[in-house]
Every structure is written in structure tokens, then in C-alpha cells.
Image 1: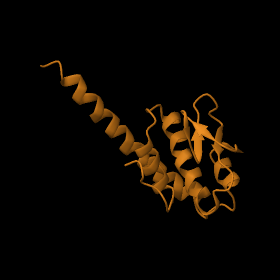
Image 2 (image 1 turned 180 degrees about the vertical axis):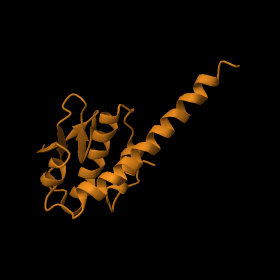
Image 3 (image 1 turned 30 degrees about the vertical axis):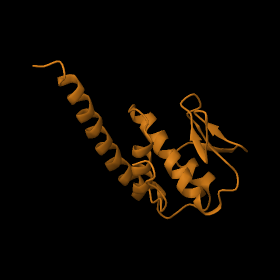
Length: 127
């Protein structure tokens, strides 16, 4: 066996976990998100998460519309004034919440995929 085997196995395991996570999220979307909640606060609340609005939001050193920080796992941060994209941003950030709760490394593409499974209409910039 070559020394590159662990480098191949880890991405496969992460891929399998991500697939399982998307399946769980699809179930959650049927059980928890339908019918669509009236507000972003209600949507996040179904996952036990609060929404906090932060003007000039910066996440990981980059200006952002939304942010999830593992240091505050019960909070999603949003930039005010997102209008029609707010629900989709909340769904994307909930994707990060789900990744964290499942113990998988957070990544933008995975959060976009989870958001899509939960019903986001605007997603996929990271994939």
C-alpha cells in the first residue's frame, strides 16, 4: 500500500458523510420546513437557532450576507436588507449548522447543497 492511500480514503469518507447529510436534510425539509415558515426567524427557530442582524457583517475576514460561527452555534448572523435573498441565505447558514452538528468539516459547497435540499432558490455559487 502506498502512502497516498489515506489521502484517497478521507475524501471518500467525507463524500459519503456529505451524501448522508443531504439525505437527512431532505427528510428535515419534508418534516420541518413545509409549509414555508413566515419569517427567517421562524425558519431558524425550527432548528433551534436565533437570527442576529449585524450591519457591515464580516465572516472569516470577508464581507458577507450571512455567517455561522462554531463559537456561537445557536446563532446565525445576517446583514440587514437582504430582501428577497434572506430566506436563501438563512438556509445556506443552516447548512453550516447541520454540518457542525453532524461533525463534518464545514464547506461552502456542502452548505449550498443542503440549502438546495431545504428549498433555497438561489444557491450554488460555491460549487
